[in-house]
Amino acid sequence: MKIAGICLFFLGCSVAVAQKTGYAGYSEATVKALQQEIINLGGQTDLAHASLGFCVYAPDSNMIIASYNPELALTPASTMKLVTTAAALGILGVYFKFSTALEYSGMFDTITGVIHGNLYVKGGGDPTLGSERAGEHFGNTIESWVNVLKEKGVKEITGNIIADQDIFDDQFIPVHWIWGDIGNYYGAGSTGLCFNENSFAAYFNSGKEKGDSVKLVKTVPDMKEYNIFNFVTTGPKYSGDKSWFASSPWGNDIFMYGKIGAAEKDFEVEGTIPDPPLLCVSLFRDSLSACGIRVGGQHTTSRLMRRKGIAMDSVRTEMHAWNSKALISIVYMTNKSSVNLYAETMIRMIGVKQRGSGNVSSGTDAVESYWKGKKIDMKGFRMYDGSGLSKHNTVTPLQFCQILDAIQSEKYYKAFYESLPVAGKSGTLASMCKGTSADGKVVAKSGYMSNVRCYAGYVTTQKGSIVTFAIMANNFDCSASAMKKKIEKIFVKMADLSR
Image (cartoon, rainbow, N blue to C red; front, side, top):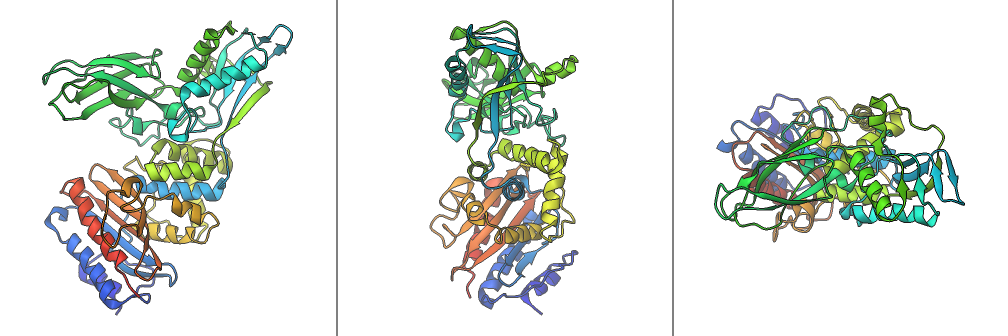
């Protein structure tokens, strides 16, 4: 019997693997060493209550070479972004770009410079609009819109400034996200008109002693649209950021809780903008007024107009349009830095293109269909968002391995591979395996949330061949950093595989 089969039987795994198992041409000694390392991991006392899954797959021979519960459905956390970003490249295309446009309704009198109607910012779902990560800045973005109007000779707009966010639906936050995440920067949902990554920075000055009040100095952008309630207090010196924010989607209130270390000045904490399209057009209207372009109406959004029963103008004229960077650049940023918002926007845009609906469920259904079309058995796979923030998501280690294998046959493979963090070198793997045989040889997406630590990607073995892998741990009793160190040992054994 082949080694993988022996190990599965020995460990008493209850799930049968409908996949060939064997050495796949790798030396028996290195395969056994890898398998023994995962057996040792599974037997440790601080994993006694954990769910652990592992799979190493040799694409060139279509064979599992080592495994442990490979068909166990587990919470993937941010490794779900692998599934999302690769599908986005396949469905939308490597060079797909999001578009944002300025449009007006009514008539533009070029003699007087008056737009007799409304001015629209038509969102195309671009998650990088005004994002410093993408080389922009929200202030420069708005300034560029103002400059377009000035160049066109606009001196007055008699109507409203309206954010058209209707390319996506109004379900700002995926339904299965938890309250403790919403309001914090990583819990920013996706809208048809994203802005500054739908987040803001709050700057605090803390007190000198534990328990002192903390002053909110400013917010960037200026969150003047919102009621802010600051309950942050001073913690021990050098204790860092122990604060958290709470706000409801489309709401008016932002609550700030927790602690920051003593004697901090301009200490930055990021939170979610409850209504990004509304803040965007509010700041745009202010900038227009500041440069002398009169606005007769107010600022509002398509969502707020719909709630009041007011229809948007069906006939509009485009003044100018901007495109985002190519999708592959956005995928690169998504995977290297694990940006939840970018993945959520991809899911919604996939829904638009494949199902004609910019909601989360349309996108997740289309993604699952995409991978089924690659002949991957998706039993046990459950997808409720694009980023992996929902704990309701489940993927098996074998599914990750097979998806990563399928990607190797796609034209976008090289670009996708280069978007993944590299052990010891970049992204979320930069601190792992330094100075070991796995340094620079493991290329993978990490996934981390409370009691979840997962990795999935590619390993270049001793002779230069590539295997796909996934290791997923849920509900372990040790710390996250201790779990990470345990997984590093698995990385080294994978890199030591030899033919």
